Picture (tube, helix red, strand yellow):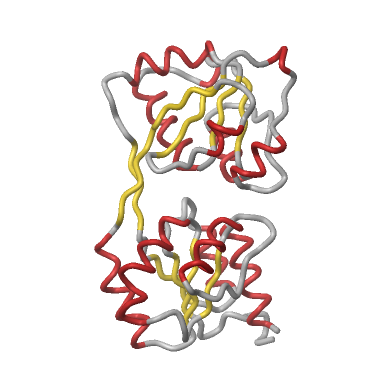
Length: 252
């Protein structure tokens, strides 16, 4: 161990967009240099039907949020139309503690969080009494999978509240960094970022010569299928836990 700084001399590249500066501060505390080079970008999807959809939210028994991005987009709509959490009495389900915390900051109480922060675990563990469920609304992103809609044994409506797109401006910088520097670590928080990296970066630099970290078994699976070796994957699916796990690996 290097005086409590296991990431000393290490560059830690984030291929997503962290919702908090805390994860960068954690890298610095361990002696590393955080670099944000997002390969995907998210934006609220604003549509003419937003006010109508918001006004319908109180008629649902459950609202489901699987990401902080969905919460941020939903929160923006609440502000735009002068609504608050108090006007929506539905039960709230959240995938992940960070998603739950974001909802609580909006004033919601979170009633259900799965033990593993993924959609496939969510559908296995989400089992409210049938007498409590008539209508469910899933607040989703534009490239969300079908797991929640198809595998929950209740009728699920969907509302796409944000879009996910490639962030091509980071690709050149990421390639240059991987070609020029040593002691590099590349962290992936979503399959979408892996797909961009695999298609645009890997043909120029390959999969070797740097440490790869992943959040979640789904992201890990996509990396493995693309030909990568996943060196670090925490049991708890958050960026903070991923950095902690990376620090433990470098410490050893």
